[in-house]
Length: 225
Image (tube, rainbow, N blue to C red; front, side, top):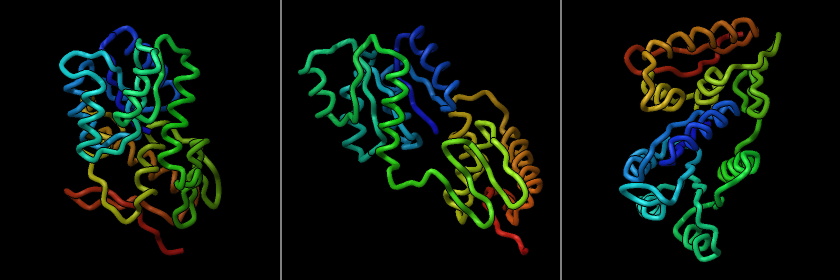
């Protein structure tokens, strides 16, 4: 699951990023409102954590412009302002939730789970394709012969493939969704992880393969039994 974190306090941002990644979220980090708006307009996120007091554009301006542009990504606003009027302003501007600083990290994680769960309330916890299933809560991939608990990036890539098995997903889209826009990682890391997933599918005895269309992308394909 990919989050956008917009927080100009570098120390807090670093701490939040470390905790979110430890809890299996992929995180893109920005430090001002202008970048938050640019990144948020991509609609490439499952949730946005947005500080209100930021340079260039404040969080209220960002959320208003996102909603005006038709972006429906859930937004959790962080702020040192805790008056009722400030909370009402944030929610009326389009935020889904509001958390005043200082806050407990456990509460932040719970609010993120609730926020993203509301968006995907009709999305099942287990995704099936052919003779494999992916448990999104346990990171567990199951096939005819075995089960594996996937690593974070393997899980994200396979979830993308299984959620839209007929759609070709490009290497660049994998990079953006799993590693982030600003990642310094070489693009061939996608090929490495595709290889890992292919080996796991073979070990499961699954009648599923990851098909590559040269120069276009990857998709799942059911094979003959």
